[in-house]
Length: 417
Image (cartoon, rainbow, N blue to C red; front, side, top):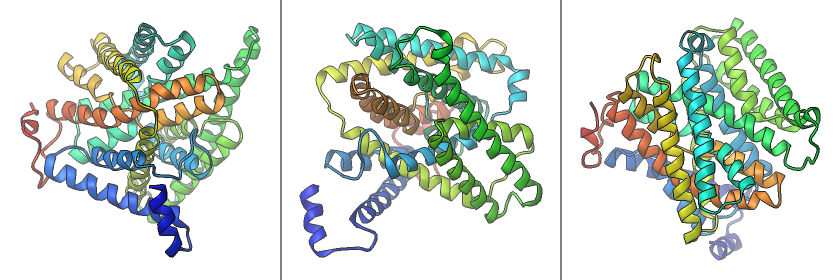
C-alpha cells in the first residue's frame, strides 16, 4: 500500500493532499459495500463497512496513528459524541424512576460483564491489573452499531427500546469507570481524597460542559424550529465545540455529550424531531467511525495466544450480558425470551471501545500495549459478529421486517417470531 501511494504521489498532487483522496475513496467504497451486502444478504451495512476497513488496514492503509491523536481522535470523538447525545436524548429518567428494574438490569449486566471478563482473562494467564482494565472496558456496548442495525432493519418494539437504553447506560458506566481507572494508574498514594481528585475533575468538567450544551440547545429550541436545517447545523456545531472544549479542559467528550443529551431530555421532554439533515450527517460520521475502527483494529498484532484470549473475553462478555438482563427481568415489563434477545443485542463493540482503549494506551506505556493487544482484535471481531448477533436478536424478537428489495441469507427470513 505504501509503495502504491508513493507511485501515485509522483503524478497526482491534489490540493487537499493524498490522504484526503485516499480516505474519500475508502469511505465511498465502504458505503457501496455496506449497501450491496445489506441488499443482497440482509446483513447490516456495518458488516460491509468493517470488511472494507479491515482489508485496508491489513493492506497497510496509512493515516491513523496509535494511540489516536490529532484529527483522527477528534473525528472519532465527534462521531461518538453525536451518537451518545442522541442516545442520551432518548433515555427518559422518568421512565427509569417508574421502572427501576431496567436500571437494575443495566447494573447487573455491567457488573457481571466486568467480573466474568476479569475471571476469563485471569484464567487465560493475563496479569490482574490488565484483566481488571479490560473487564471495565468490556462493559461498553456500542450504541452506534446497535442504532445502525435497528435503523437498517426498521426495528421498533420493547426489545429494541430496552437494548438501546441498556447500551446507553452501559456506555455511561464504562466512560465513568475507565476515566476513573486511567486517572489512578500513576498514583501511588492511598489517601481517598487524592485518589478521588482525578475522578472528580473528569466528572465535574464533563457535567459542566454537558449543562452548558443542554442549556444552549434548550434556548435554541425555544425560538428555532426543530425540523429546520439551521437547527441541525446548530446542534452539530455545538456538539463539536463541546467535544473540543471537554477534551481540552480535562473532561471526557463522549461523557459530556451523553450527559448533555440526558439533561436536554429532562429540560425539553417533548419528542425530538430532528431534521433529516442531522440523520445524514450522523450517518456519515458513523460510517467514518466504523471504517476507522476497522483500519486501526486490523493493524493489531494477531497470533494464536491472542486469539484464545479474545475468544475467552467474547464468550465471557456475552454470557454475562445475557445473564445480567435475565436475572433482573422480573417486573421489568418484558418476558424472559425478550430479555434474552435484549442481552444478545448488547454484543457489539466499536468506536466507543476503541476510544477507551486508546485512552489506556495514551495513559500507560506499560499497561496500555497489553490492554490494546487483546482489546483491538476483540473490537474488530465484535464490530462484525456483534452487529450480526444484534440483527438476529431483532429478527427473533419479531420487531423487524425483511430488508426491502433484499435477498436475506438462508434462514434469516425465518428468524422472526
